[in-house]
Image (cartoon, rainbow, N blue to C red; front, side, top):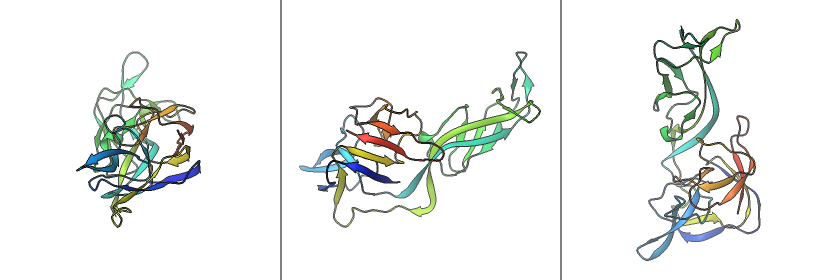
Length: 228
């Protein structure tokens, strides 16, 4: 839930009224809509509400945070396949670093079923083991995943309630944010788009809005980008 301005060619614009029903955080992308003959800013979906600027305000019911490359080791018995590998004969459960996961944000390198509220995953029976112990024997799974979660016991906040106006960055500049799609890859110089949820993504959706100039990682949980 952050937006850092690194460099910009102009001042932020803060005189447009905001859609009172919109839910957003700094770093999401805003677009223009007509409500009762009044032009307002709401969250862009990239296509039907084209991207207009980067939102620098907050209006949420709860706080969110991203987790990048959460590594979960899950012990499991193995049954030999006859091809040198082993598969799990029964489903096994692992525990993620956080709870209250936002299901649509989850991406991992193994097939899993998620219990979003409790932050657990179940790897189904028949999945090939991919983790070895110190003796070189297959003993379970190593799941690497990324997701977003709702911060427990932290009610949301609003910076637009008093004025009904929203602050947008409209000019070309460099920014960093944690409001990005965690289910896709980010390569240096890759074009970025506005996702259907208003977050930055590399999945093609509407016009190109910028390019990646700094990739997120375990140590650096934010995406750095050039806004065009």
